[in-house]
Length: 231
Figure 1: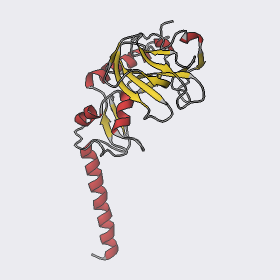
Figure 2 (figure 1 turned 30 degrees about the vertical axis):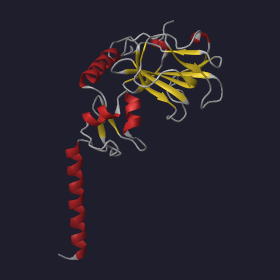
Figure 3 (figure 1 turned 60 degrees about the vertical axis):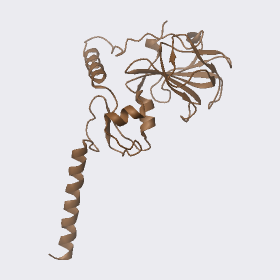
Figure 4 (figure 1 turned 90 degrees about the vertical axis):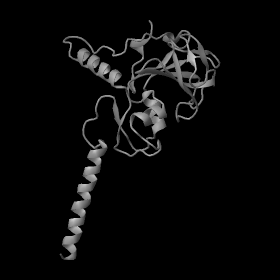
């Protein structure tokens, strides 16, 4: 066989091997992602994915049979939710979306209290889903920031750029709340907290003024916090 034909054959074989390995891994670079799963994007690591979906690195590694948690690839599809939680959320979403004449109802029924006193009167920026993934509440430096509901502290620190001193609280298998730009943090990772418990002091870390940036995330997706907050 002449050299050009040999090169072509090698390319064909290489393409077939790559396609086969991708199929075996169950993580195609394109196509739909199943409920409860996530496709790895450029810049992702397991720690950041865990923060986004309210899971620990160890849990994600176990669910996805990862021997080395640092070895994930762009395009790889990872399981990020338990089967029951994903299925329940999917059914609830479909039911709400297909009810004629009604707006889409929140999947999660968790009732939240305002994370700062008089928060409803002091909103300085509303959720829009693009430039603002939550609401910004004005106030005085050192004012008490409170847990919006019972839960467990998933993260407390300054490692997420743009959020300053940040606290993430997991409330159930699908829902977490985020409290950003604090002046100081009063809780630790894995600590259980009660609704109304002071978890931080309001501040201006990594932002231009004293405020609390508050987010609600369901199955990793930021949603408008207003429907969940007590009026």
